[in-house]
Image (cartoon, rainbow, N blue to C red):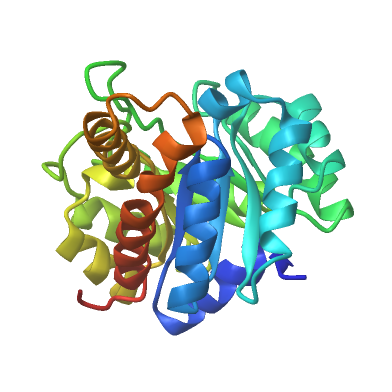
Length: 280
C-alpha cells in the first residue's frame, strides 16, 4: 500500500530540490493513466479531485478510485481534495480515505482565511492527514483576475495556520491553454524570504508556466508542487477526437476511450520528469 500524505512527499522535495506533480483527475481513465505514469517514472504523484470532478462524481466514488489505484503501485500516491470549500467537505474527504485536503479561503479576509485554514489544518493533522492553504488569489483565464500574494501576509499565514503547503499567486493563472504565462520570480523570492523557505509552496495553474521554468523552479526554489490540469485535458481531448475519427462506427465507450490512455501516460511522464528538474 503506497498511500502517502502531502507532507510525506513535499518535505523531501523541499529538502532535495525537486517538486511533485498535482495532477487534476476527472475520472477513472485519467487517474489510472497518471498512476501508471508515476510507476514508470518511479516518481510520487498527487491525484487531485477538484470541484469539477466532485460535481460529476461523488467524493466516496473518487476516494474509492484513488485508494484502489494507490494500492496497485509501489510509488507514493497522495489522495488530495483540491479547492475544498469548508470543514464539512474536508471531513467527508478524510472519511473516504483522502490523505490530503486543501482549504481554499482565498476570497476571505486574511484573518478569516487564517482562522478557517488553521481549524481545518488542526482537524486534518489530528487524523494524520495533510492540509494545503491558499493566500492571495489565483485567477482564471478569461475569468476572475488574480490578486497577488503579499509576502508579509504569506509569512503570517504560514506561521499561524500550521499548513503543510501554501498555494500562492505570483503570475500563475488557472485554465491557461498555452504556456504563455510564467512566474514572477522576484515576487516568489520575496515570499520565500518571508516564509524562510520552510513551507512548501504550490503553484496552481501550472499548465500556463513554461516547461523550462517549471524545471528551473522545481530545482531552485521552495515551489514543491505544481498543479497541472489543462494541458492534460487538452491531451485527452485530442486523443478522444482522434479515436472518434478513427472509429466512426464504434459506439462502445470503453473502446472509444481506450486510445486516450497511451497519450495521457506519455504526457504525464513528461510532466513528472520536469518536476525532477530533468529534460525530456
